[in-house]
Image (cartoon, rainbow, N blue to C red; front, side, top):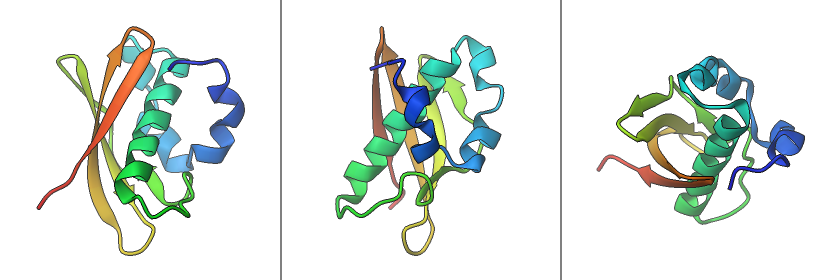
Length: 107
């Protein structure tokens, strides 16, 4: 859910690569608050995908390319770096103020 609390904790989950690759994404009709919520939701989806815990949201999960807006869905290329790097595609969809994100893997 889009919340004003997210900017207060973004230092815990936003890596410099996340800022680099999301730079300007809010220009596509997305507010910075909504963009931070989307990235947080995407990282929560990766956390659940991995399911073994002990994950650093800032260091182990990072955007790895520009956010793509396709129809009403967002595609966020991520790299998961807990052990060997694993490329992931995270899809997100916004329903009013709610964000739904899920992980797509190859293979």
